[in-house]
Image 1 (spheres, one colour):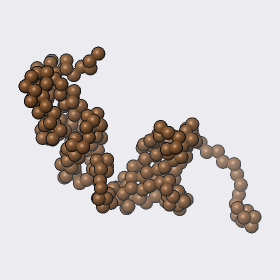
Image 2 (cartoon, rainbow, N blue to C red):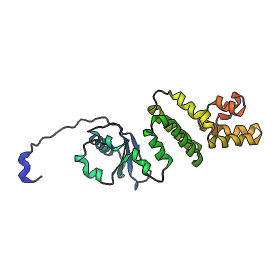
Image 3 (cartoon, rainbow, N blue to C red):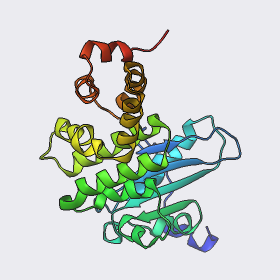
Image 4 (cartoon, rainbow, N blue to C red):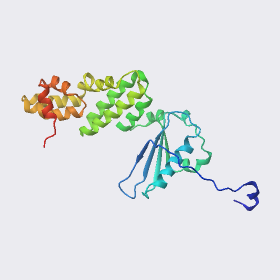
Length: 240
């Protein structure tokens, strides 16, 4: 502060009470050279958004024992929602520390990914959301071999659809991925064909864990494979 400007200020010691904050997502690194990533999703205009965001981040950094550097990622549906006051935080927002993502502009990216397409589902029109969700699941099942990862993607998409389509119950959305539509996917057909080609009950039993990984119920698997439900339950139990 320049000496000539001190008369314009009044000094006081201020106590700032501890507040409770919630960060949408914190990605903690496994190596000291990697940064901590803070992720925040903002779908409503909020003038105080950036003041709250940086308060949350710096409060976390003050409390954690980690000494890693940090980065922030903020996701908006479009630029019109990004209405927070930025004057106090211009240097941070113009630096490489904070990346702002506008979902409606991701369509301009030539090389997309399952992750980006899943995030874009948030702003997909309701009329096409379920169709697009099934397309994403189909793509994931063609590109990803790990059943657990596919199941996580399906669960994330289910969560997005629950918020986008409140008129549908969680059970209705799960049935959408657990019955007819899912059975039409290449992954389901390949797994089912594997058991069918074996021509033996052993072959059918081997694919049960994979079908469970897709989110199918015991009843659905039993019906699809022509097995007794009790047999499916026994095969579903982890082997000791």
